[in-house]
Length: 220
Image: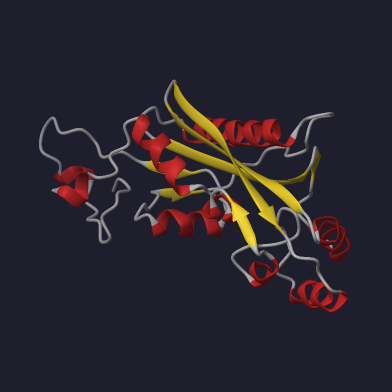
């Protein structure tokens, strides 16, 4: 069934289509992130499949954060397109990058990495870039959304408690705004959903621009 804004979409089988009726549009989410899947569900969009892209995510030498986010989204979408090989499917990929100035912060895998990120972000503002890319056959639409995030100055107790929670594991910049770290962030300027992992308004616009039938079911 094509993803749509219908809260309870039907799931007709291809065999039930009228003769000559086009197959329903398919949406593939090229990301293993449960957060991106949940954000799409928030907008009533249910992908037909979800699978992470196995690519090298190392930044290039001298690569700036915005360019890196854009490249990662494009490469993830391309990898998914090559795997599924369906000219009619819509492939959606995204990558979120936390940056302090020109510096790209890692997806924290160890407590030491997470502490280093938090110490760098504490009491300052930083930028979060999310690159999104939608591919359908030879057509492609992409953009990068930037959000400015301000952290309060963290006490040693707050930092130790957050590190003990383990919430930072695998998170860009060592934190998740939708979790405990939300208490550290007095303000943001830009898209909250982008900091979580997927800017919804911009994603919907890209999908719609390539012809994905977002509203069809809910209006029928």
